[in-house]
Image (cartoon, rainbow, N blue to C red; front, side, top):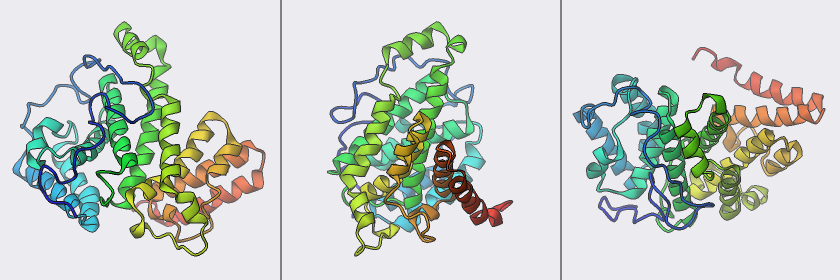
Length: 324
């Protein structure tokens, strides 16, 4: 359990929004000035303008429940209240920045890194992220993942399985988005090209691969899944073990993107895709991602019957969710 104080989670390995100090898989990124304007929603909102009493109460409650390791309450705040507040206040603008809420959460680095993961994800979902958003989000993921891998400050932290699965999914989505952005050379300004040239490690594929691989190796999730004496239950997994599990699926996806389909299938050897109660079934998007990329890999390897089986299985399992 965490005490709700400035020492609640202890200081993480690295700070988000800037160069990491130790850890990581590459050199520091120099984001320089924000490229492309003020923000991903057009005109910036005055600091504090959208920080209503209800939002203040939400931030404080979110922080308190994380400190208490109240996973069910954090899950509710993550799924329901965040969405409700977004629709009411932030559908066309950014959530309050780190400096606007830090005093509400005792400047706790762990909570702020997790909050900024949601903050940048919101910009990617509801806005049009600019180059500085893409780079700042990358720096935040590096700091957050370094902290999880180090474990000194998060060994007793508990987060909802769904948030951790979404975190890996969003990490890879933003990687794909940046790859697409970076190769639209004729549409980029000279300033953007200069920033990209001076920051070659931002969303570098080797670093992305390094983080996913490290989660798998350090969590020992493969050995855990292969142990017949152990029944893997989501509520009993640590944060690192959960990230390791979803990183296996992420590696399958990443290797499909690079065209190494045999290696993609090897990544999920430890996952029993026939298990109707497997952890991948907890999140619909994760199950779809897993079966889609397995099916795609089979198709590219000309194993058409296996590919059809994968696609049919996931389609049938979600046919009742349409329109809900």
